[in-house]
Image (tube, rainbow, N blue to C red; front, top):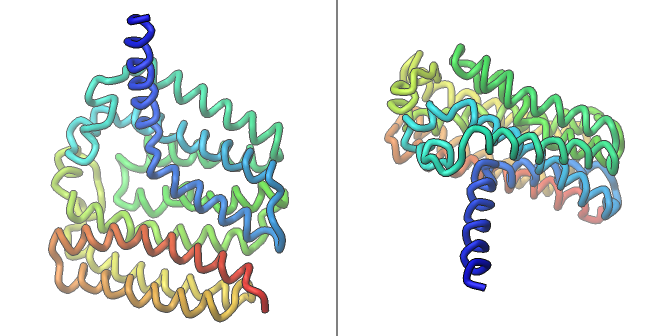
Length: 298
């Protein structure tokens, strides 16, 4: 009996380490955006089976991509304060374990999507996996300061995956949601990169503030935030949403632009950190407003 009592906590601790490999906070935002895409794809309610299996499949593949990212960047993660607490740099898991966990959950996720959702969603999700785990992590991130702009395409795919899961199609509305996340990604990530610039420099990664300097990056954050404000008006322009969303988007954009202005004109690491954190709240509330607007009776 004592052996069983000792084994269970050890097993639970190992599972917890595997879970941390999948970056659950990042995956939760990915899943949220995918579910928003599912709900916006239909005027009624998404069939429960599709909702559950698509969410599960997308989450598993996203977690697999995150684990591959941790595997490839394990030496870089050990240098940076933000990431050195991850399981691989700490020696809590090894390379073989990480590879097997990623392969198992990724393969299971793709199988779930193919069997219980539709092949289009499976192939799009696989392409997203390759875009993040291979094209962004292996090719773009160490080679160009525009890595987050180009690589942001894979991070912007979740609502398209969700839409495809429900309808088997990817219409212009789904790609507009993609565009919102795509334009949101640079000011979101560059705010982080600004106050972590020394860590990226130590890791020899060509992030924008490392290559072009802080002032250029600050201007870029502000410029992209202005562009984002314009893009977020498009759902109203094309008739995808109504006045509720427009007012909510306008209010959120005013707040985000104010943060971006402070990053540009009144910079401090604290300001950049607050801008980064608000950007996550911004995207969550923006998509929530779009969803509420979708179900409001007019």
